[in-house]
Length: 283
Image: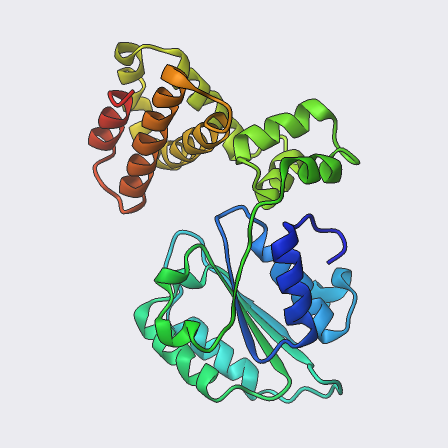
């Protein structure tokens, strides 16, 4: 897995699955943990091609959806892809990646199950998900699960300091909570939306409750910024709780719980003003 920074347990599991890939695998980890890059690296190894050539490989299919369900149409596209002939030899000559498989609709998961029950020859199906609980048990039972764990901070620093300065790496670590995929995105993009969310989160943390409430109207009109801000507050709390003690630890714990609850509510389109007001009064 050259070019990736991995937790030793994740690296060991990936090496094992790359030697005996079977027909399907499920990568489970938090958003930003690098599942997408890991899925592509695994597919390239199994297909016996260079990782850099994966995106141009003609016999691969990547299905994904952001903030919406992956419907039955996507699975039909997959079935059509599988019906095509692959004029390439090798133990494996075709790869399918389904990103955010937890977003598959119930109908789509049921249709996908048929493919897993009768897997096509020389094809590897890689699914990624934030939580295996949101994937049907019947699908999980047919795809070995690999948990993508966050690497140690020292490993992340060693990996990123070869290309970025320490100040930028420290900031990216604090924002991401040590998620390597998100760290890479933050370091490579000066206009990454989470940077704006970080400024907003710092503003919230620096102000008393009354002044925080003045921000509710603004954030309620920018739903993505609101969701990103609750995510950053969670990440900041996770990092701070590693060293905080006493009253500071108690406050960070309140922030963590409040931000998590608010993020969950905003994700299901709850009333943003009510959600954000409760958040601002929670710590």
